[in-house]
Image 1 (tube, helix red, strand yellow):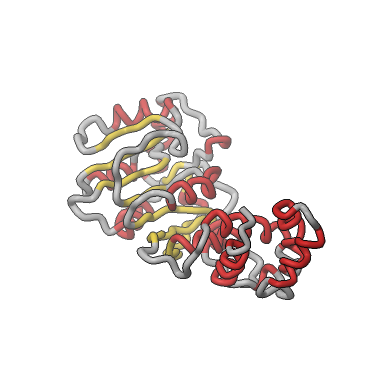
Image 2 (cartoon, one colour):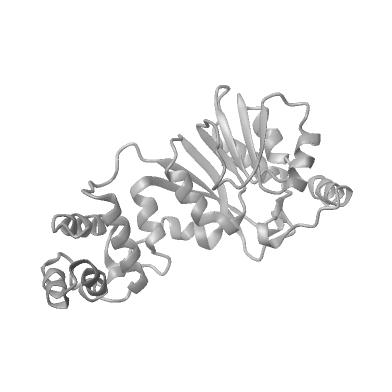
Length: 277
């Protein structure tokens, strides 16, 4: 048993904490992986780091030794109590109790975290609406593969296309499930996300792009024309007009799964010109 695993079990027992599956409570107990996350975050002395799901504070402690400030967010009041006792000697750690998706978070410029996997998708979209330099996070392997899946592959999804528009994604390292306690059912990976300074293609209307991506990926094996008809009928209130528009679109005979992110952008721009909103 590693020292970190031993310490984790001791703290959980001492504070009578039973990990909750509903909250995605799998605690990182591999010191090597924690150090990898810190190293990949490339922290400078003036960085303000956000940690989501601080747990028992092992990563928090390592981050605080490298950065100017750590904002440690934890939803479970049982764990924030442990955090405040364990980390009271650090004056550069701010502990916030709350749901990251609903809580006001102060300024940060980097993210380093092993967040609960139950919020992976909403957390990612929450982050992409923030202004930050880079994020180093652990995700379940299958989820991470969807982030930069090749066009046409099984894992290619609306998540792939949406994230591609906003950020560059790099898969850095595999993390075995045994690195957590209790171990999750699948392996994980460390991922680095960097927001794009310039989008990879121009959009005339971001809402239209989002709507088109979401609509088409519910029918990823259909041809674009057929997948869009119901969406268009809702906009123009006429099946005949909807079919006419669908037949005028680029890529209408391609399967949805065959479209590159740029193609979704071109479709959205074409439909934006038709004043369908």
